[in-house]
Image (cartoon, rainbow, N blue to C red; front, side, top):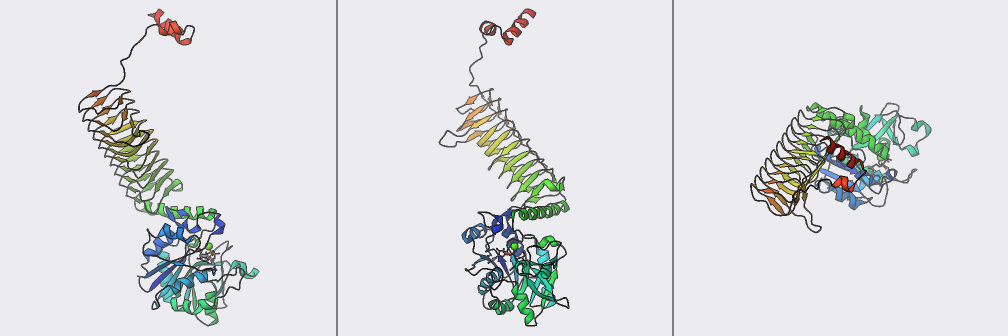
Length: 476
Ligand code: UD1
Ligand code: CA
């Protein structure tokens, strides 16, 4: 266990100019959380004594986005001195003076380094008894990264930033991943000697390994075999690529837990979602935020669920739902829109072109076609006829509709809220229900039908309708 004697410093003070965004880079999201949120989640798994996030650019926005979800993190403000070396220095200065352990430095823009990778990295550092250990990777295209320069014995000599590299140094394909472990005493000793005499005029954290070597101290390197764990986000193309890699990892995790995912490339599952064994996900489906899906449910195709709870063996197809609860064995879709507060009971049905909001729909009740059900409590065994609409809004306030057990409404019923339909009541087709309906009553509001015979031939002579009517009359 890595637990004790460990501090984690997450660098998140930079602007992220290459994102060309109003939003600070580290707050851009993949897998349902900000980039730096993934780093904080992973940091949480390492059970460090201290977790510090260094902020500066849009610091209030960054802190506000994180403090609720990561209460253990301490936010440290970087001053006007730029560079990763300064960022680490202010964070080290904020650690208790008696902290004497290791410091794991991570970047807020590198979200793919998982806890297992970081644990092995820490173990490698401790086994090597080095002053510092760098995570490195050998890549096809090292552009943009610091290069790891080795000495004649193959040990780490120093790191050179791309902008300061000679042509020979730039040709090196081993890169600095931007993740490090240092003994805290090493940082306290060497950071004050790091200057800003370089191409970017910044205090480079990457100067520390070279300074250590000048003093004859040991710097270790831990070369990762899966280079994707080192991928950082500097622009929007990398944001999409890193997001895709994270998603692939999440999908694979659920597949190994017994979830059938027909098309991983078009299935997007957020990190916070939970899926049970024998769930089936059909193509083009987004399972977002804290959605949970119980055993045997079939979701998709073309479905988006945000913060939803889906019961066992439910079927949800071509549906858009947010903050909705779908009961066991219920069916939803196609083309259904479930807004927040929808609760569909077990074996219930919400069908084609139905929108629901703040609506509790009881066990076995059906809203099969073309309806709007908002601010309503619907009992058990209810059937709302096609195009039944709750008129819940009087232009000023929202009102509730209550439909008790076993009510059946006729097609095109309008329920003008506030209104209550008693148990077992029925409505005629086209009814506009403005008054409560007592249990067991039939509510009718449409005027009796009148047929005026011969009207078409008399008033629409010469039209196709009149001719057709005439032919029918002759045939009789
Ligand atoms: C850095 C490394 C480089 C490495 C690469 C790996 C340095 C000097 N260079 O370069 O060797 O290959 O990461 O991804 O460290 N930050 C601050 N304060 C600052 C500047 C940056 O907190 O003053 C934060 C940023 O928000 C970011 C991280 O540090 O999360 C890295 O900064 P960035 O500018 O992206 O460094 P790179 O150029 O990628
Ligand atoms: Ca970077």
